[in-house]
Length: 327
Image 1 (cartoon, rainbow, N blue to C red):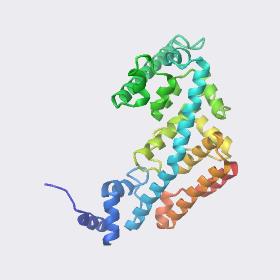
Image 2: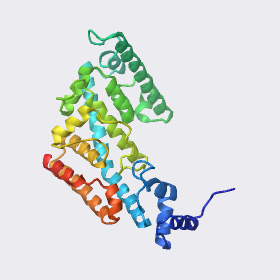
Image 3: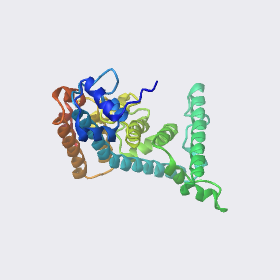
Image 4: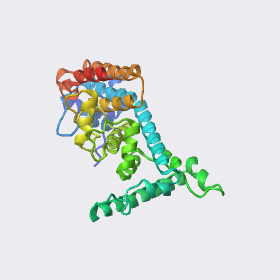
């Protein structure tokens, strides 16, 4: 027996579950956002056991629109940061190895059994070597996938008689942000430290130089959620717990009492930190923060206080004020 429900039947189902919805306008909203992507996707905050006390479809639609505006606001900044970090890492690596050969990078800049620091245990040496082999496999898979898709950044090197190796810079062009983060994690500590310094990261609490790739992993989770139109505003995309250096760095640099990456505000803070490091103007960064505050306040005005108490963190605007003062 089919469980299919027409849009009118879904509206009746929502009304039966305490959600006020009626009329052609809200019917079209339900069609446009989808019952499953929209209502099912936004009826809870972070996890399904934390239901949001919506009483009208207006509140659900306002939440969907708030999330959409957030993704639009964040997209451009994320692309800027991703491109800049890749370029800084690329330039640092090529300067370090004095070459644009991927094989020279593997040999001189990537941790392995043979280049482990003196005193490294046998288990750690083997871990380095395993990571290096995984990295080589991952990059080769990325090249093969790009060639299959006829990506000109890769086909140029294989379909020309005079070329037989894809340079590092072309490989960086096709790396996903996750693959880029993994590459950074496989580099020697010395090379990671140089990349971190060239970015401008505060390394005072980053003894093992893990900060650069862990921040990339954190940004990757947000970037992928934006790219795939997943829910962003409640940070359900978060796949990693922040390390102590990740929290301490932002607290020191931005003057904040705490960081835990459990609210969208913390990701706004992280983005602003990188924009600051990348020498984006104070005017532009503060305009970005003000736009985030504006769309959040507009959203608060469109939902009940009971809904806002769950969906907007109580100290969000205080933290944004501290952030603006630190820029």
